[in-house]
Image 1 (spheres, one colour):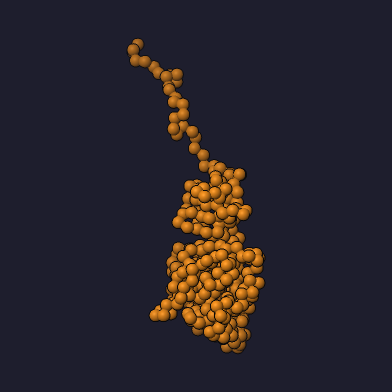
Image 2: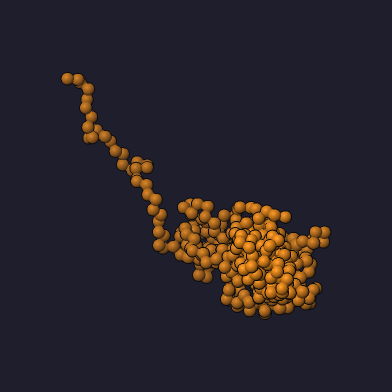
Length: 333
C-alpha cells in the first residue's frame, strides 16, 4: 500500500473574515430612512437640495452611476442632512419625474441635454428689440414645451422700444398666453402680470442672451442677484451672464428656474412626425394630405388650407416655421 496520505475535508482550512467570502447580491439598500428634497442648484458634482426649510449639499451615491440629476428633481438623501457648513449628504434615489424639458445642441445631435425636471410651465422670454426677436427660436421652444407636457408662456420684454402687437400676431392662432414688460425710469412695468402668471407654478425661463431674463428674475426675486449683461454692439447678440440653472422661490408662491441663455434649441429628441401635431392651428389641414405626406411637398394639403384662411392671418408665417423645423430636423436645407 502506498505511503501517500489521503486528504479529507477536515484538512481544509477556512479563514474567517476572508475578504470576498461574503456572497454577492444585486439587491440595493432600500434607504427607508432617506429624506426627500428638491434640487435647486447644481455646481461641479455637488447638488444643493432644499429639504423642508434648509439647504443641504449632496453628492451622487456610487450606486446611481451616471444617472442624470438636474434642477427640479426630487431626490432622496441619506447621511448628514442637517445642512450644517461642511456637511455632505448622498443622493441615493431620483423620484419619478412628472415632466422633463430637454434640448440638443442642434437637430442632428443624438445627445440630449436635460435642462429641468418637474416644471409645469415654460416661460419663453424674448426681447422685442435689442436684440431683434427670433420667432423661429420661439417656435422651437414651443415645440419643446408641448413635447414635454408643459404649458407655454410668452414673456415679451423691452416693449418700450417696439410695439408688441406685430410680434403677437404670429401666435394669436395658437392661443398662447403672453405678458409684456417694459422698463420705465429704471423700473420694470408689467411685473404684476408676470407674477400672476407664475403664481403657484414651477416655471422655467428660457431665452437667448441679452433678452432681459436676468433683469426680470432680479425684479421678481430681489435677493436673486443674477448677473445682467448688455447686447454686443458688433454681433447684435447678448453676452452670457447666467452660467448655470438655479431654482428660486417666489415671494408670492411658486418657483422660477432661471437657465443660461441659449443660442440654439435643438429638437433631435422630437419625432418629426409629431411636430405638426404641436401646431394646433395647422393640424386640421393635414386631413387633406396624401398618404405619407411629409408636409413639405407639392401635394401637401396644408397649402390649400392656409390659402383659404383657415389658419388665420399668420397662417403663411406659421406654415413656413413648421416647414423650417421639419427641414432642419430631417437634415434638409
